[in-house]
Image (cartoon, rainbow, N blue to C red; front, side, top):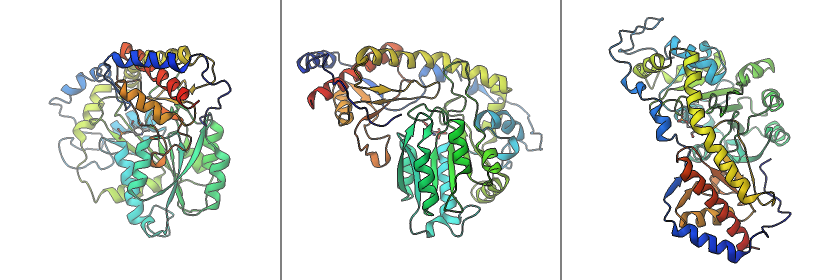
Length: 424
Ligand SMILES: Cc1ncc(COP(=O)(O)O)c(C=O)c1O
């Protein structure tokens, strides 16, 4: 559970003077480490080298007769949807549309359509509602929160548990307030906790009563195939469960290949029920008549088939898994069983969520910055950048090399210990 750490035995192993002396050593190392965002490392980007030479001069015409060089193909090539839809969205290809490169842009776009036109089941466009609210599991993804800010959506934080969002709270809120129109969900290897929602959580999200007739789950499956071992956590069938529970249009599912090939040059996907998909394509046809099919073909030629995708993700995992282990080792060594910190050990994704002594996260990030270690700003994992406990820090181990990561992890732990000592 990612609620604040209860400190049973404050950091009494090391005195403040000793911590200050170790911190002075850290500062003298002249570190310049950036761990602010979870981006792929250069080695991971190199895995997509061949991708850059594709599609070449292929004379490919898709099965539905669309010439990849020309206008057309609003839903995306069927071959490309077949390659990715089950793996990334847990949906059949017919229920999926390809977008441009960014799933975040599709989430933003879905909200734009909802605000201008409403979604299936809406009485009116969301812009005409007095207030629109979204449930935001915390710790969560800062970009989801900034989209809400942009649309002036009121955010209702709900704590993440090991099983996913606290469903007792979610159910009570959603059933009781018709202005709650949506909820952000990163159901698999969540950002930043690495949590995968349990079956029970998924079932409750699908089946819960909603006061708003047009309530939507924004199901951001960003880390669908980003396992850290050969043990692949399967996709949750949220759309099927919603349909079985009598809410066929409840889930908008999003994913992309940003962290599979190259961020900025991937493909993004929207998947949902037939009615939602028809709504999506109807809205979309006014904004584009020519999605980038060159990139779709490039993906098709690069991966070939589902096995090609699996092999490629294995190569990512080989590079990433040792980094997660490195942070875990450093934190275990530094914090031991003092009870002064708690961190997650994800089976996939890009982040580790670190909870330290309440009141110390901002100071820890500040101390780390002074020592040359740039971390994600404290509070970023909460709406408005305000962590009420000032306890959570998102750790992004992917980008830096292993030696640097070890230094950064030990350094971060030391800063957390010093911050705690300062308020004792
Ligand atoms: C949960 C989550 N969703 C979406 C994204 C961004 O996806 P895209 O590159 O497809 O816009 C990220 C990137 O870190 C993420 O962590």
